Image 1 (cartoon, rainbow, N blue to C red):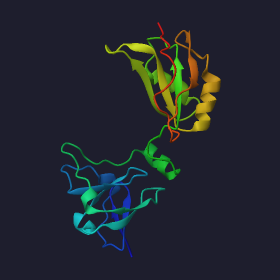
Image 2 (tube, helix red, strand yellow):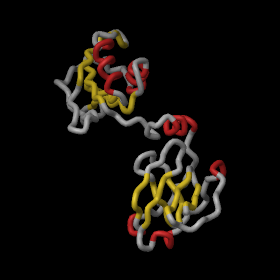
Image 3 (tube, rainbow, N blue to C red):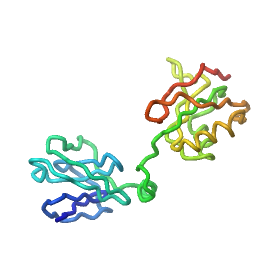
Image 4 (cartoon, helix red, strand yellow):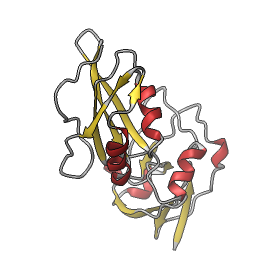
Length: 203
């Protein structure tokens, strides 16, 4: 028997007891419900009854496009922090999950970008690389006083797009300077780290 709980998405309690579904569009809390559980795959969060997890049980995420299943114990349920509330996923995240992706981009290919003008902002750099593929994160390195150091890193969601960006954007002119683009240091799991080469100061 599968019983459904719904919040931002829906959660199945395998061999559990049914509870009344809630309207997804109305999920804007004015006070914190007792306990929550979060899907590790799509990051959807669900209000649950702690009593259903007294000895632990198998649960399955019912978020759009997500069927992740895991064993949940009561001692690992979460409490919503004061001042925070649950809201519905924005459409962009729903579309990503429906396509079998994570709710937010996860960086898998780290790219070093040097010879940046000091006027270049992270949003400027993101716009350039998003012309190639999905960007998970952009960071322009700064000194202790918060001044840009003329280099940074772009973390692409897909390795193929990252390799293409290195090939096509090395030498690209951005705000009057030809930027240098090369593969940065990748960690053991294939996700981009912060490593790269020297400081590549701009002006």
